[in-house]
Image 1: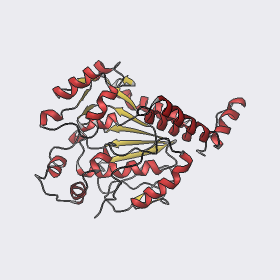
Image 2 (image 1 turned 135 degrees about the horizontal axis):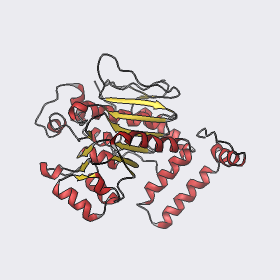
Image 3 (image 1 turned 135 degrees about the vertical axis):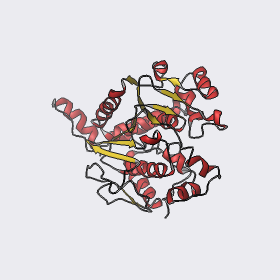
Image 4 (image 1 turned 90 degrees about the horizontal axis):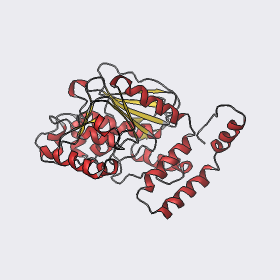
Length: 333
């Protein structure tokens, strides 16, 4: 059974007109065998065809077994839950495959404006790649025994897609870190745009203690979010840091009690989803791209994006609703 394949050099669409993304999305859908006419996402089984949500909001129902990934949709927000609490929500081959599919599905879903990523209830948000299944497959010490293991053996880049190292969903992504985030779990958190983190949880990159380095973006991204001294300490000692210590570091947006993390993240997501979706996506894209551009290039990109947005219906609706003292009704066009 084949997993859909993705470009090894995925386009972020940064700075591109959101109105022009439909053509790119169609190409992506074709290259990944995506269906654009299905009403609900089907997650939990490895299939060569991915169903993409369109207009119906539903909480997915899984039959006959507990899925490693849960998705809920409501009010333009999707909640993605890593669901392996018995294994500290570690990324085994099945979860890697499901995440890889899900990110594409959500990026293609016009009804989703913001995404929240969290872990199933327990002590850990995500403990990284499963050392008993994923890592042995990747380093060749174990032969694949099922479709999921075959998929990552044939295409190790699925790990980068699952952790968003090599794939950008193009929409605001909020991490609801309700437990420890270690190794690949920390890297997954770093890939999110906004981070709501529980008090007294451990955040760390443990790879050098195992003879590796963080290869899902941790080494490349950590110093972009933490002062160099803190980043070096976390990376080279392989020892986790308590979230409270990093509360004012720039890594964490909100530090909450464990029971309030998801609600806090949802509050942010719902606020974002209430804004004009094209404008939010463009603002995010310009901000992400600008860090690698000169000021002149960033200003040019900003101007191009602004000019495009002024042609949208939402740019007419926003000021009109403000003058009429009512809530705007944004349609994403």
